[in-house]
Length: 238
Image (tube, rainbow, N blue to C red; front, side, top):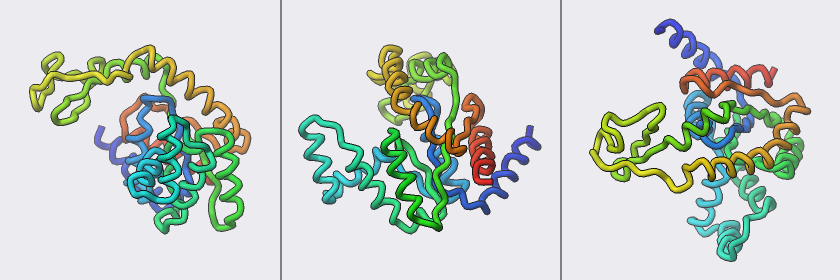
């Protein structure tokens, strides 16, 4: 067991010398994209760029783009691709993106993918985007989502199916009654999966056609998934 872990760690250590470039991390709700993005940040020392974080940050800071977005959202409308594109463009000008970055939630549509590819193509020293999709079967994702429970005090997350508390319904640390998010239901999950598939399928096919797409098995330990993503990026960059 220890030799296996050591081999993975050694592999990740050697890959830190590689310039990863822009990486689009894909995956259905519940696959653990956020967890893996954090692992890749540690491995490569590149930033995670989340469009949700960018949007909230611009609104909170009162930037020109943030003010426009706030007005649009205040009318109950969706923020258009063009405005999200502008926020991403500003973020990509920051010096911490020089060796690459992990894209989370962008490009979400084929239009956004075309915009990003076009922008990067104008920068001769910038690598193109490679897309890696974390794969977990539907039933396993459903168990992850519907089994999630949160401690309202310390925010510890449990799963009644795979990581239950010692006492059913109560936090191991605080003893508080665990809660379930209103959207962690099968009905909401089905709708989120439908929306994800409709939006993401064209993006997947876009990068697959360009030879810049790979899939990794997401039903494994966190470290093993991260190693799989690193290996996939290495293959795509060759």
